[in-house]
Image 1: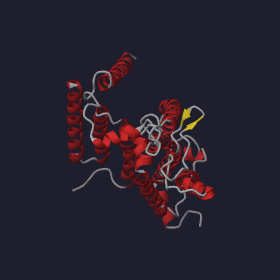
Image 2 (image 1 turned 90 degrees about the vertical axis):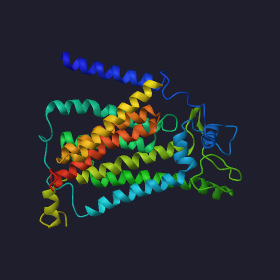
Image 3 (image 1 turned 30 degrees about the vertical axis):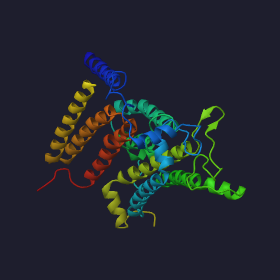
Image 4 (image 1 turned 90 degrees about the horizontal axis):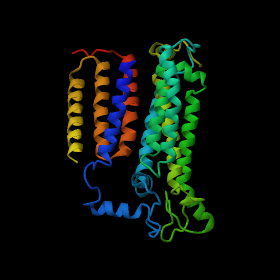
Length: 271
Length: 83
């Protein structure tokens, strides 16, 4: 017991010291002493209601750059990830993850299972908070999705993959959620154009705030809450797409190799 | 400020050692674990370099998802690399 207490205390002290050194302790020195002109442009416009044609209305410069200033790059990055997962799904196209379904009794020891059950809700809460605060604090859709994708992975390792199937998280359901995420991103991309066409104005693809000659934009505030227009939508939909994209990958990769080979030879399966 | 540079140097030194050990390791499972150790050192360095966005994505991908995916693949093939 003493040993565990010592480890936990020293871990906590290390985290506190690290946090202090990186922030209040001075870190790398003054951050804003020598700015490059490009950084000045981004920092000067990312949350600046006075420059309403240039601002992204988000205090989080990185998310603003990723989904607004260079939104199309991120869109195509998402497309690359989409195609990678589709490749995995295509390779496993005739292989059902439901074959060989077994009940409980699998996985690691009871201690590991209980600890995992305690940690999973924390992990889910952190992932959702990274997604929903992505336009305010460091983080965003991909970060949150990556944090969330650890959950199905841990469940597969600790409880076995049949536990996920018991929770009804199958390949098709994950694909459906992933498609909802991607459709949401596509809708957010085209929404300003659709709105502009209906009202007879001009608009840009992936437009966030109003631009010169394009007066249709997403609202920066809902009530008094800063949502940064389209940024929160992109973060939430990307979160869905990435979470379930990785979930599909783990569901497929965790199928036992002999079951995969049996199904490829056509001995078992749903033909 | 000097402490930050010192910690950065230590983190990158750990990363270098872990990378070397991962490359020369014949057992692929151990190599994946060493690669994850290298990633932890990189995470520390990125945090000290004030890149929290990268830390948030780097940690789950390189310590959780990537080793898990590689371990699944190792299970499907062979554990020890043969010359």
